[in-house]
Image (tube, rainbow, N blue to C red; front, side, top):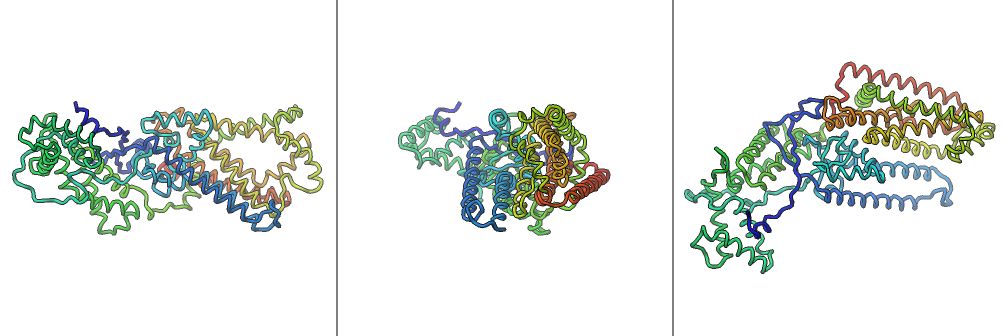
Length: 627
């Protein structure tokens, strides 16, 4: 057992460590469960603690708050009709910019920073943490989208908030709900410099004396002595004297001939022991048959120069991409990576100082990210993604989309029939504004005014507001799939009931056709998109409830990856539908024109999904291969 002084010196916070395998991109269970180890090498990354994650969140909240404040001040400086200025295109543009900017800040801040900045938001960068994939790869755009869309579930009050917080507190890797679905983990990311008294940044390889003798102190004893010598100047007099006295008492029986002054003795002992640990006899027998232990100091002196060279090269390659290294450097870089990875395995076998291991793990991780991560030079084929892969994902998940349709349509029919059979209950279940609009509908129709007709100047504002609102509904439908589908089911059911009840209300006033004329232009695209987003939520729920042959963790990650494609398809359709709704449905265009657009939308969807079907037949694994 270590004495009290040693415990005090050696005390370090015990942090969780997460073992990440360096895989060779082999796929088993669609690349989720497979972790092909490169030469048996495992990289241990230090998990970010709850405190650093909360501090990062507070910092990011401060950045967002400042952005909202500046946005508000900027809007106040612009002339708007509500402040007495004349209506102008500039006021309309300001309103559109406001709506879209608020939406992008709320939903895009975390997603875009993490996806495009190596898993780091400004707060995470400040706290020295970042998000990576469970496999150790850099964070992908899909995973960033999944983990940050599910964030909305963690933000809900009471029930889901407590569940999300509980996962962070008690999950072995401190994962929140979004991390579980995305297959990500938050780790520490501060640049690690090897900090050993014997091998600082300026250490040089000196000629080895022929006879230095073998080390006389155990590794743990030398670390304690090393820490004390390093902290001498910072210790107060009483603490310095007490710690020095206790260590001298520990070492005295083995060194009867020593300096009278305790501090001089410890400094001299440290110097002599350091020289021995750099010498040829630094290797010693360790516990276990045939095992040896190499002093960290000698190991570092021999290898550090190569490690540092590789670390700098890996950092440059990770930042700029392998292509920037040049064709001549890439083979050498790969060879260096394998050499440093082998040094890491050798260091673990020899029982090298944990600080050396931590440094090596960071170096190997940087090399792995540079070799296997995505880089600026790698581009997604956007046309293929939009026209082939996204509709293929929808076709592949058609059973879940159909289930979402039924969860909406059956309550809608129920709501319609209930209001038609019992008109009086409309005042109990529908908002007063909707009832007032139905009562005024006959007069508006007689005047030739549409259901939600707005002046042409405000149509862009209407369109942007509708798009952002509908996209948020799609995000909610997907994210609440993590609640075993309960949240998604409620959202689809309640929206279906409301839609059916409103249609029944207007039918009671003889205005069903008037209402449907408004819905016709955009309704086909909008409802289809909502069903697709609902299918995404149900897909996640299926991964949680019925993982099949996969583990529940792997099933969730795979479901999240597939569902992200559905959400992307839904967002594209909702943007198109919102544009039509804001610019056409809310205009005074002729009903025939609106119904023509509705028919064209249906034809467009048929062609879109036919394209996806053909692509899926040609490449059945396309919907799950790309991360």
